[in-house]
Length: 433
Ligand code: ASP
Image (tube, rainbow, N blue to C red):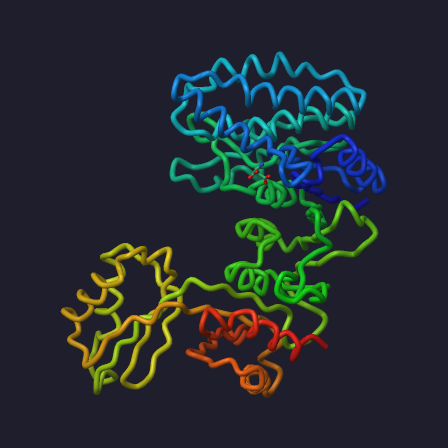
């Protein structure tokens, strides 16, 4: 018998009809024994997420104001869910307990975690499964990192039977609740998969896996059948979102594949995230976004000046700025930074670099979009870069900067923000077969 951890996202658990579909999926395969649940999400675009209501409740309570409105909406949602699913669930009792401490902690983590806690309890009740509270077995170190002791603690709880573990939270060494960042139930799913020694981590969401490009830019973008953890990491970093970007690490370390599946289309195979791909198509995905600035520095004989690069980067360090890319030439060096990171400090950074390395020229080029073309097969294929640049030339897109990482797993290009869509479309059309 295999072991499968299956995590269901908030939209898959938004109402009783969705939860019934989820129950059917769980019951369809007895290997699905470790269920990780998010809090109920939006039923319609105008609806409220339970987690957002809990954050609101916390903030209102902290200000000493009356939080009866978010509480009432949460109560109604869970009461309806329990009634429609035909289980007894004393939501009033739970909410009274939560209300007692609603404004007690400065951090919102405890309150935010209650959506997953309540939903986990409800789903365990419906499934007749054992409820496992992550407060008891998903542990963080004082630094906020996951304590590796978690795997043994949690693993010891997950023997025999069917289990429901709420997503999104664990406990600090002093027992207080700490959540992952938003969307963090994906991380819990990965931790549960590893702790339970699952053969597969199914991540059930509302899309049938990853697409080769953002469908808002390429509406007919193909589904990615298989992608490696590393490729996904590159794409996610450049803005492709489906899975929380920290969710890969626990399963990657244990070699457990992740299967992204769609609760609305349970027969669809989705996307498999694996250690090594069988298919060797050179490009598996393209992602990109705007909002970058490039700082160009020029100095004759820069290449002979020892420590030049370190001195430039020390300025970023002093300003507490993360930089993203570092294309260099013989006498030129560029530093690419996200605008959100630079946050109006651009001129001050230029001045500091000017003082530090006395360049012949230094200028700031805003309005840049970065596009990553990702594929582990690239290093086996001659001419990928040529095809890519050719496609961009044919589409009339000017490449401002190009950067191929030494992993030969991606080619990153910088284009004018206004060319972003055209660039992604042109690259996609070149590599979609
Ligand atoms: N409910 C949490 C959120 O809205 C965590 C999750 O759904 O994964 O971010």
